[in-house]
Every structure is written in structure tokens, then in C-alpha cells.
Length: 384
Length: 73
Ligand SMILES: Cc1ncc(COP(=O)(O)O)c(C=O)c1O
Image 1: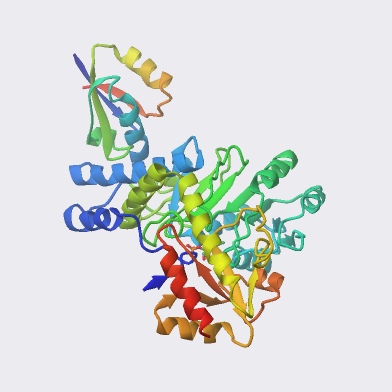
Image 2: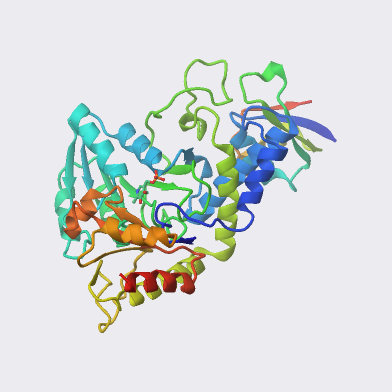
């Protein structure tokens, strides 16, 4: 199998991740945060270390403000539904994933919130002056995806964060496509709320994500229930992370995430970033050699022109003249080359690219992708 | 040496304190919380020190540890 769908979920996982999860399942698969016997404390310690690893990766000083969720979608829902009230206003980019667009449209129906969309330039970058102008009125949250899952465009989060800070507006970043791949520093970038899933660039099994909320941001959790603490009280505890984490966690996946974040911290995000960037450049260069193939995105200028120095992440979207995305997928599937076609849960981004409603073919390399795997994709596409 | 039991609101705080206090005190380890302390979480921290309870409290406070109670055991 040639796996080029890392923007959906990463595969393979780093060495040691499957073993750590397997060892948990076969040797000490008990609950966390509730009991004091050795296996329970061991599990609690793994979860604790996982939180510490995430804190290190994103420069978060208080790891208790990191809440484990099912995935990025659950993290984004928790924040949006906790923060936005009747008639609130949310400001988003024109490239959001449905994980932001759908909860907001639900809140629009049920709570009459306003959704404002930032203007973007021809490439997709948020126009800073428009952000400044829109923040002159009361905005309850700015929610922006760090990188597009359709074509890899990376927003200038640091500048956006600084502008939000100047206006005193809450700033939430959907880092589903960048966590573990691009350096994110919540302090330096003035990020108040950060959401990501474990199973993409953080290289863990699926079923775990996290939500970080800066100290001082308090709102009710989406889910209430047992936390293993304050059990005599019939109301939810106010302390963190318990307040936001009811019910038994997905311990196996968190143990996988503990191992994968250890791997990322050792290799460093910088090294991972460089390696993914190199393999993605190789992919783009080679796609550019294919006749009738059009690439989408700011840094896809064609074979004879220099690459722009703008940062991008690994999702690369393209179409081939005379073929629909699903026809291309059918050919690639027969060779067991895995790509994703269609709208990638992000119709907004496809409307922006004018590839709506057919969508594109998306190939996304990962940290472990090799050049010879890209060569196989290219050879197959050339034969079409 | 005196033995102290320190309780916390949740397991996260217990493990944070264990990490910070290992090396600062002797015999830092997690133990089941006695029923008499049942308002707190199921795990507590046990440690040994020649210091008085007040002195231990000061060390914990200075280390930025958020705990519920210190009991001499
Ligand atoms: C930009 C973006 N946001 C949110 C998500 C949702 O992630 P998850 O499926 O892990 O909840 C994705 C993944 O598809 C994404 O690419």
C-alpha cells in the first residue's frame, strides 16, 4: 500500500506506538484518575505525561488547561458551544473545515449567532486590514484554521493573534492540520484556544484530541458526569482538567499519544517540518511535470517558475483535465495508492478554489513517506 | 523523620506534586486516600521530612503546588 492520505489520518505511526498501546491492553488495561492500586496509578501517570508532552510541544505553561477530547471536532464544538451565546458573533476565514462551519451554523439556527467571514486575498490568506476593520465591532471569537486541509495554505497565525490581542478578542486556532508539523507557540502567537486531533500530525491512534484553553477562559463543558474527584458533590467540579473531562477517557489512544508526542519531541517539530516540506516539494515538482494536471494553492506556480517561499503543509490538491476526481481515484485504488477525493469536509475551501462541487484529488505525504512512493503515484498518473 | 499525607483535588495535581517534590523530600509516593479525607480524590501523596507541618506547607506553597490538606500521619 502507498499511503498518501496523511491529512485524513497519519499512517504509519512512529515505532513504539503500537507496542505501547498493545502493552496497555494486554498488561494493565485499567481505568485512570479514580483508584490508587499500582496499575491505576501507572495509567494516570501515562495520561499525566501525555499532557506534559503536549504542554511542551505548544509552550503551554499549565498542562491542566489541556483537556482530552475525542478528536479536533469535539474540541472545537466544546469551545464554540461553550463560548457563543444568544446573538453572539463569530469571525472565521473563508477556508474553514466543517468542524467549525457546522457547529457555527447550528448555533446560528438555535441561538441566532452571527457568522462573519474574513476576506481573503487571491491565494486564500486572510486580509489583515479586513480583520482590523471587523474587530472594530464586538466579536466574541475569531476562529481560524491554521492550515487548509484541502490545499495546505498556512495562515499567518502570529499576526492574526497579535491583532486579536490588540482588540481583546478571543482567538481560537484549529490546528488539526498543523499540530506536530509546524511549530505552534500559544504564547508567542497569542492563541487563547487551541484545538487539534491526535491522529493526524501528532501521530497517535484515532479517538483522542485535545482542547487548550488559556487560564481565565471558563465556560460549561459539553458533557457533565463522573470525574473520580469530588464524588460526594452532585455538581461538576470547578477545577481542571476534571471540569471538562467527564467519563472514562480513551486511555489506549492517550497512551499512544504519549508515545507519539515523545517521538515528536525527540525528533523535534523543526526536523519533522523540514522532512515533510521536502517530500511535499518533491511531490509538487513531479506533479507539475504531468500534462493537463492543475495544482491548487499559492505555491504551485508551474514547472518553470520558482517556488514561492510561503509556508505550506502537506495536503496537495489537483485535478487532471478530462477526468473527474473519482475516476482518478478508481485508477489509483487499483494500484493500492491511497488518496482522498471530493470535498474533504471543507466545501468553503473548494468554493474558494472554484472546485466545488466536484472537488479535487488530494495527496498528502507524511513524515514516513518515501520518494519512491511518490514516484509510483506519478508514474500511475502519467499513464492516465 | 515525620511522615506526612497530602491530599489534592484530583489525580492530575497529585502527580504534578509527585514530580516536583521527588528529590525535595524523602519517600515521595502515591497512596490511597483514607476514607476520613473522602472529599478529595482517591490518591494522595505520602512523604517524609524532618520539617514541621508549617515548614512543609511553606515548601509546597513556594513550589507552586496546589493541594488540599497536609496531615501528619
Ligand atoms: C482543518 C481541520 N479541522 C478539523 C478537522 C477534524 O478533525 P477530526 O476528524 O480529528 O475531528 C480536520 C480533519 O479532517 C481538519 O483537517
